Amino acid sequence: MKLSTKLEAILYIKAQPVSLEELAESAGVDLDLDLVEDALLQLMADYAHRDSALEVLETPNGYCLQLRESCQAMVTDLIPAELNTGALRTLAAIALKSPILQTELIELRGSTAYQHVGDLVAQGFVKKRRQQDGRSFWLEVSDKFYQYFEIDQLSEGFN
Image 1 (cartoon, rainbow, N blue to C red):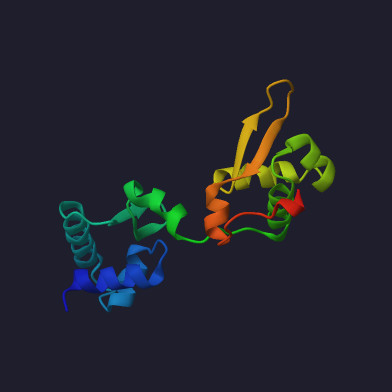
Image 2: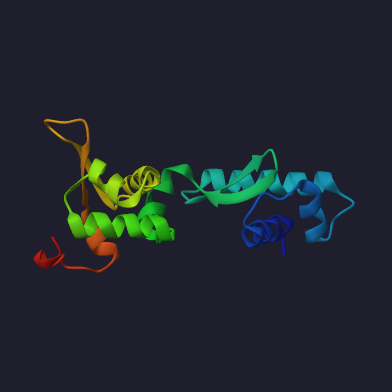
């Protein structure tokens, strides 16, 4: 097996930046860092010249195999969101009272809900629009909420 192929496998398995020394040791050539560096440059060039979703980069912490930035947008659509208990409760309150004024939500959930709302909007679960005759925002669940939780629609009985 070529050294560049071994390095690629190591970077894939580690899934985090790996130092040149650690790569050399893991590949079984710990006495020849120049050989490892040449193989890494070859691997980097291979990824640069093909139309791949991955790339090999040198970071301050070492070398890593990662998704190209141009593909990052797909991550939010394909990987399930990480929602902590507080954010889930805030999302549930928004869903049950949708649309709800942000000020009402804060009264209901407390000031930590500001952070939850920001996170939920950023992840696409909540839509936020400015109130026309006030300073607050209207909050309501988005289509992503319905898709993610596999809900057709919320019952009118909850409002």
